[in-house]
Length: 268
Image 1 (cartoon, rainbow, N blue to C red):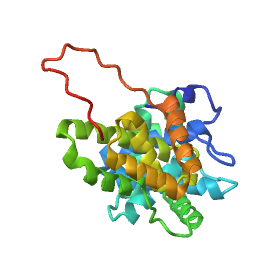
Image 2 (cartoon, helix red, strand yellow; image 1 turned 180 degrees about the vertical axis):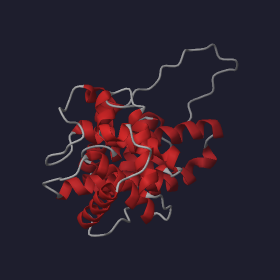
Image 3 (tube, one colour; image 1 turned 60 degrees about the vertical axis):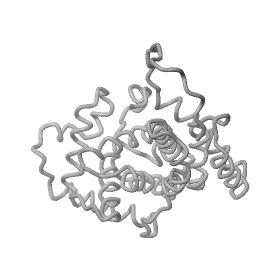
Image 4 (cartoon, helix red, strand yellow; image 1 turned 90 degrees about the vertical axis):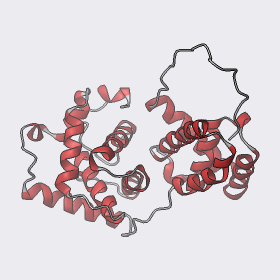
């Protein structure tokens, strides 16, 4: 879901001056997340890594000479290469063009520039050169290290510890909720200030609910708080809550009469 504020924020939504705005950051996360289907790549590590590349780039650079669309393309290209799932620049660029063209927001459609509404999917040598240079600048900002520790590593470890304790249909729902919350942390303004394990643990607590935590999950969260501090954990929780209010809405589901007796609360 695109943040509603993109409809009225920037006179030129495709340009960046010193750093990206909150609206641009949230929109980029949404767009590159949508690209995973067409590009056939995974949320973890490819999409998450691409976005963290951009987070780190804007953390260390005071001036950005590139349009937002160029940086999105370069970040995805860099991430795909680093994760051994190579996609060509043209493939990535055209998938992002397709997504932006179909967006209901004129602001989002403006990201690709008028020239891309008429092309046939072919990039000019100048466009490829600009994306290549953007990739180099992204890598410089990372000291050429694209191997990031991700919250998903800790999520997978926690998942394997509780899987045997929860019925499969509940387990899938619980895991999906935690994944959504981890994505909210990654896309937040303060992600680089939050330890990856903290992001995963805070996502578990927020999604499941503190009163529904199993002993295994409670012990893990307490260990994380002891290791990284309550302040870092609270920053992760507040980031989830803030981003959820800006970019995420749960769909309401009509209440139906249960066909079977209601089961007791599932603890995760």
